[in-house]
Image (cartoon, rainbow, N blue to C red):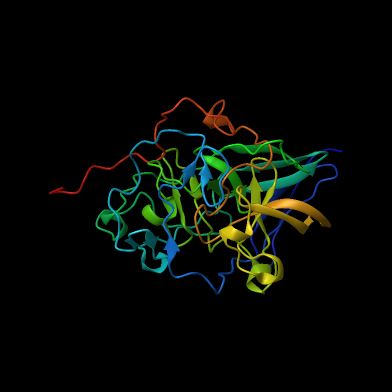
Length: 329
């Protein structure tokens, strides 16, 4: 059967351009919904980098980090804590009408093709505007640019004999086409706390890839907002799904509810069927998405051999180039 292209749109929904393959399953998504309950104070993740799977830490492939990202801490960081509601945001309301993502089943594989731009979502204006509140802390000079994302993931992923480390760069992708990065900035700090993002908790790295380090209020999650288990938010590079922050019965999950890779096993809806299966969750607290890969991750083109699941030879160029200090510093 030849491939065909379809588009789905309903009032208030996200438009996903999808590839319909033989036996394929097409994903669509509803409107973004913010959850009602979130902790006002979060523990700072700085220093929680491990070189084996440890709950509440990131099992990092990188042993060394380079300067980059925000050059000054804001007042929302205090001691070992940070206050999300006190953090400044990158200003702007930029739409991306050319955003596309295509997701389909093809036999034993799930094919994902995207251009890295957020579907039916507006972002902040990048590079960060000089003189803005964000510019006083993080002078991200990068502009959001289209990417080439082509992934062939296992449709029924299996757990590996041993968890593997996560590298810098894209470790997963949301159903809206946005890359998921781990919870670290270029310097190995808690990215969600230190770096300045827009209203969706996203920003671009030096290649222009817009991405999240943590849960985004712009990721659709109608079920979670309705007091149920969160909806599927995306796929990690080992093929396992990552869901929003609400667990069974609508409980907002914490690190203590999840294993070292930031997931657990119970019955979920997977490709239209109820199956007992391992899956990851976003949480409010660091490491925010995954701490390690439970399955075997696939490689992504621009990251090079060994970028995921193996220790590459450090250091690499940081994804955010450090800006010069402000005058008088």
